[in-house]
Every structure is written in C-alpha cells, then in structure tokens.
Length: 130
Image (tube, rainbow, N blue to C red; front, top):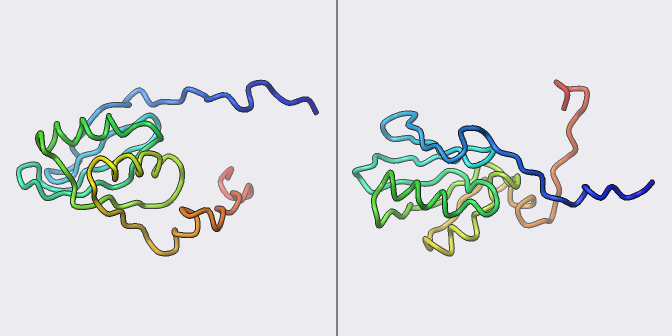
C-alpha cells in the first residue's frame, strides 16, 4: 500500500466559535480553542480561579489572552485541572505552566496516559459509531 502524502500533514480543524469567550455562570466561563473548550472557574473580581483543561497545542496565547480579559492584567490561576489526557485537552499544558508557574492536577488513573506508560484503548466500534 502506497504511503498517502497527506497522512502526516496537519489538518486545519476549528469550530466557528473558536476564540470566543463565553459565560456559563457568573463564576464559570468557557473559551473555544479550535475544536475544544477550556474553562475558567472563579469569580472574575476575586482573582481566585482555576483553568480546566489546557486546550490544543499552540493555543496558550489565546488562553492567556482570555484569562487577562476575564480576570485582569496579572491573571494567574491557582492551578490547571486536566479532565483527561487527550491531545486536545493537554496540548498547551507545558507552555501554560511555564508561563504561570502553577501546579497541574489530574486524576491518578490518567497518569499512565499522560506519561506515555499506557495508551488509551481503541474505541469500541459497536458503541454509537465509536
């Protein structure tokens, strides 16, 4: 089978809402970053907040800008909480930690996937189209 020349090319994927900061509740705001949402949890005036998930790779500038928009110039979360280790949820984690110097928290069951010790199981194609 011949190697597909498009196989290793980046595919542009994005939502029409990408870049939009939206309020869910007074203390919860979301930011659509390409195809995934990250969330800012905390009252804007308190300065006490956490970031849930770290978005796609290379999205740290958009996340930082949204944090400044929501929480002010010196915005810095108390921590970053990762829901799981898929690339679209951890993609900018390293850059955000380097920028803010905050801890990252994740459920212990996710650690093998984040460290590369394990791979997520393949989807079950018999369940809702995988």
